[in-house]
Image (cartoon, rainbow over all chains, first blue to last red):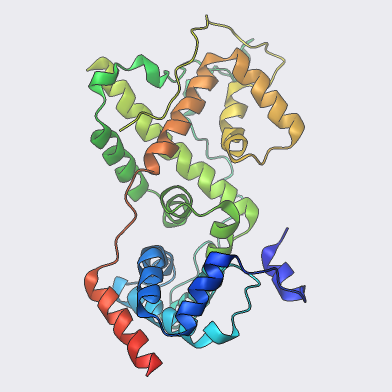
Length: 227
Length: 95
C-alpha cells in the first residue's frame, strides 16, 4: 500500500533483486563504469525533478551532485528496503527541498489536491451535448478515429514534435508527472514517491497532462484530414 | 515507425442509451481506466460504454496513441561535462 510507511515499519527487508545486488557490489567496490552507467540512467530525470524545487539549472546540477555524493556515502548502509532507484530519488527530493527552501522557493504541489482545478475538463464543454437534451453529456463533436487519417499524410516526426511542444507548455507539476511516467517509464508508485505526492495527486496530474497531450494530437490529426 | 493503434473491425454508428454513463464522464475517468485503477464496477461500465460508443472508443484510441508517441520521445541526455564532473567527484570520494 504505502511503500514509504512500509519501509519505516518493516523489520525484514525483501531480498534485493540479483541485478541490483550485482550493481551494488560493483558500486561498493568503487567500480567507476557501474557508477557512470547509473549516472547516465538517472541524472536527466533527477535534474528535471530538482528543477521543480530550485530556481535555476545551475542549482539543480548542484543538487544532483550533492545527491550522488549522498548516494556514495550511504551505499554501505543501503539495505534494499526500497529499490535502489527509489532510494536515490528520495535522497534527491530531500536534498532539493532543503536547497529550495534556502533559495526561498516555495515547495511545488503545495496548492494541488485542493479544489482549485477540480472542474478542469479534459475536453471543451461545447463538444458535448448540453443539459436538457435527451443526449446530454454525449458527444456533439466526437473525436475522429486515428485510422480516418490517411497514413501517408502522417509524419512520425511531426506528431512527436507536436507532442513534445504540448508537454513543454504544461504546468511544471503536470510536466514532471507525464515525463516521469510516459517518457522515462517510471510506474505510478515510483513517480508518486519521487515527487512526494499522494496517489490521488499523481493520478490527477497524469490525467490532466495526458488529456492535453491528446488534444494536441487531435489537432494534428484534424489538420491532416482537412489538409 | 510503427503506428501504435490497432485496426478494428468496421462497426456502424451505435449510440449508447441515455441512462448509461455519459461521454463527458467517460472522458473524465478514461485515464484511470487506462491506468487500471478503476473499481471493477466502474471498469465494467466504461467497457460497456466503449463497446457502444464510437466517439469514446476513438477518444481512447487517440489517448493511447498519444501515450505511445510520448514514449518515443528521447529522454534527456546527460551532458558530457556534467558526467565528467560527477565522475570526478566519484573518484575523489573513493580516494
